[in-house]
Amino acid sequence: MTIPNLSQSRVLVVGAGLMGAGIAQVAAQAGHAVQLFDNRPGAAEAAKAKLAQTLEGLVAKCKLTAEAAAATLARITPVQAMAADVELVVEAVVENLDVKRALFAELEALLPDDAVIATNTSSISVTALARGMRRPERLVGMHFFNPVPLMKLVEVVSGLGTDPAVAQAVFELAARWGKVPVHARSTPGFIVNRIARPYYAEALMLLQDRAAAPEVIDAVLRAAGFRMGPCELMDLIGHDTNFAVTQSVFAANFFDRRFTPSLVQQELVDAGFLGRKSGRGFYRYPAGAPALPD
Ligand code: NAI
Image (cartoon, rainbow, N blue to C red; front, side):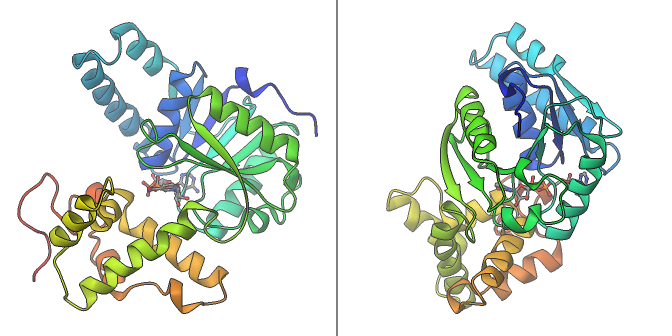
């Protein structure tokens, strides 16, 4: 397919949650005009307001000039409906195959034929997501990590139908955004989430066995040189998202026991203890007493 010049592209970010807000910030900081859409009323506006606070904090710490912060904010427009006048869509809605497929059908009815659609899915097969699309060759994974403005890595994930030129264009764009992109083929969990699953799984097993408290597990792993322990990391990611990713990797590996989802995490999701974003997970936010009974 002919690919528009993504370095100058207008960008639509769909999903204004943890990841979508960060992706909008990074794209806007790189100079793109960004539309931010979420189907939850008020979510895109709330994400922009939160971003304004974050940028203000950076200005206060002299990490960003006031002009750069204002210009970044001015480039982000929360929108009430998805529009057609963009060359690139980055999708960051919930980790659910049916929701994402329905969204792509809606987008393809709107977008010009050569617009690129990038999905931030953590684990769902890009090959499967593209099934049913009018132009499956335009879909590619653009897997950012949390928090998006700080984490350098981006997995650029090709499904069976992805046009290699689309993957290359997104790879180059990610590099332009100051990221360190890598190409990956769409296998379950891609690279990072395949390697990371056992990190979370063993911590959850320790908790299920009541072998140690989250604080202890996190302190041990930090002392061993990891930036974050597994429990605080799951709280940062969000248990709903982390659990959905495990379920998807488990199913995609034909229910290989190594990837079995955890009842401990299922309970947290059932309770709505989703981590930082809900104010409570393994820990309470802002910091305080441990959030779970012994
Ligand atoms: P989130 O729950 O913070 O945000 C998702 C947002 O999507 C919500 O605001 C929701 O209202 C919106 N949404 C749901 N369905 C929609 C639709 N049909 N149209 C428009 N908006 C819709 O989730 P988060 O953490 O931002 O994750 C989003 C995607 O990014 C998922 O695919 C996830 O697997 C992936 N991801 C998440 C990471 C993390 O650490 N949380 C890291 C890397 C990827």
